[in-house]
Amino acid sequence: MDGRENLRINAFLVIIDNLVDQLQMRREAYKQFHDKFAFFTDTVSISSSCFADSKKSAEELIASYREDIEADFIQEFIHFREHVEVNEEKDLTTPIQLLKWLRQEGMQSVYANVDIALRICVCTPATNCTRERSFSCLQRVENFYRSKMTQDKLNDVAILNIESDITIPLTYEGVIDDFANMKVRRVPIKY
Image (tube, rainbow, N blue to C red; front, side, top):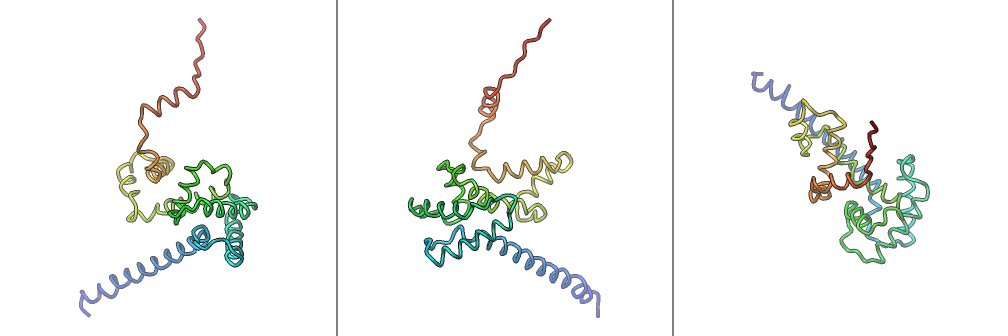
């Protein structure tokens, strides 16, 4: 066996096999995560069989996120689905569209558990990409600020990037004025 064949067998093929295994493992993990939240975007209306499936999926979601989602999530979700169907919103096919619609309608306090579940569904894949930097712009941010940025600040910058559709219209002057007007804490200095 010459050097080229040795390199191909002992290095290249080993790396490719490892890469394929890792990608399959990640694909399975993301599929399991997606399956937990798939009942949000089922297009079938809530009928007897769909209701039973949705209820079972909602119970499994509550079991997975006990500390975040309360037990009344099931009734809240059923009411939410009916609300979406009554409004005949056709473009609500993804969790992020559902979350944006819920926020635009100002009903996150009415459907608090649904809001939490949708935020978990939308944010978890994005925050899970910290080590899969080739698939996100986090690599550029982390490389640029590597010497100066702590993990907390990196997380904050990542959240700002994820929510860019909200942060782009903001201006520095507007934010400064809002904070200045919120609470003026001036204490007169006595001599």
